[in-house]
Structure formats: structure tokens, C-alpha cells
Amino acid sequence: MLKVRNLSSGYGNVQIIWDASFEVRDGEVVAILGSNGAGKTTLVRTVTGMIHPKSGSIDFDGDELCGKPSRYILDKGIVQVPEGRQLFTEMTVYENLEMGAFSKEAKAKLQESLEFVYKWFPKLKERKSQAAGTLSGGEQQMVAVGRALIGLPKLLILDEPSLGLAPNIVDDILSVAHSMAKEQGLSVILVEQDITKALAMSDRGYVVENGRIALEGTAEELGKNEHVKKAYLGI
Image (tube, rainbow, N blue to C red):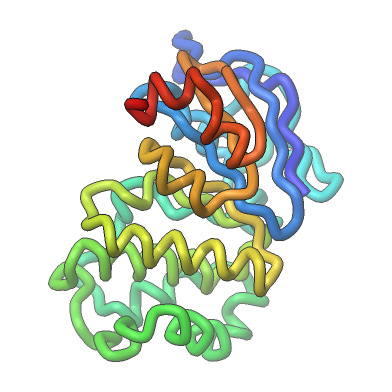
């Protein structure tokens, strides 16, 4: 589905990502792991067109995305849940979810998609008329994920979904993402500092260090890797 090859990017003259290569297959959950400031978010923002790459290629279902605008990439089916959720806090839960329907197809299937989202996050149906800013952090994250799902993604990118949330809420959200991948065939990129939780829900992973892909492997292989255990798991 997604094949990233020799990707380099950054901000202005400051290069953050160096020659990164990774891939995501259909129905797979892939973790992008690393400490704060390692370059994880810059990497996925480059994939979604928010940052223009300096070099490399981004192939999505046979379509080269390098240099394409974010809207084009969104229409192709790559949808990101941004770090920090970025909701419209004075708008209702329903209105925030409705904002996810960008494409003609998503607009046509809005009601069907809403029921799909409510199935996974029943609290959102209960609170659909409530201002999003009055929800708990975990509920706001559910709205952010739900809004992305309304866009009918083929590839869903979750950027630091655990940030500021209680562990049980994080488990619930990651479990939903894993279940959708296995039951609905959705591909997921999970960007996380919490390596333990990420590996528990992922098929494979890549560890980013100083803007480079330092390690890759199955979730089981990375969990047993001595460097990962010492540097990130405190073992």
C-alpha cells in the first residue's frame, strides 16, 4: 500500500529526516517509534504533504505523492489524526465529526459513517450535541479519531494518541485501531513514544533516532531487541 523510500525532509534549511525508508501493507498496523524529538511527527507530516520532502519517494497504491498537496493526498485516502487532537472546541461533537467529510464520497456516506463511528465509540452518540471542548481528554481523542474515520481513510495515521491520556483510555483507542485493521482491512500507522503499548497493538515497527530509521522488525522482534529494551523499555 504505502512504500516510502530514501525520504529526506525538514523545515527550511534544517533537515530533520535523513534517508528514511519504510512501508505499510494492507490491513497492517505499523508503529513509528522513538523518543520525543526523534523526528516521528516530521516523518508522517511529510507523508501527508504538510511538509515538502527534499528527496526520496512516497508511493501509495502506485501513485507517487512526493510534491503533491495535502488535499490531493487526503483524497487518495491518507488521513491523519494530529497530535493534540485539534478539535473545534466550541462546536458540537456531531459538527466536529461532520468536518471529516471532505470528499464527495465521504459526504454521500456521512450518515452511514456516523453509525460506524458510533458503533466503535458509543459515548460520542450519547454526547453528539455537546460542545467538544467540554469532553474529557479521552473523549476528545475519540472525536478526533472518529472525524478521521468519517473521511473514509485507506490509511489512518495516529500521531501520539496516548499524549496526556489515562492508560486505560489509551488502551481502548489503540484496541479500536487494531480491531479496525483486522476486521475492516484498514491500514494504520501508529506514531508513539509509549513503545510498550504501541508494540502490543502493532504487527511491525520502525524505531526513529535522530531523524533516521535505526531499527525495524516485527513487534515481537523489536520487543526482544536489546537496544530497544535498554533505551526505551528500561529493562
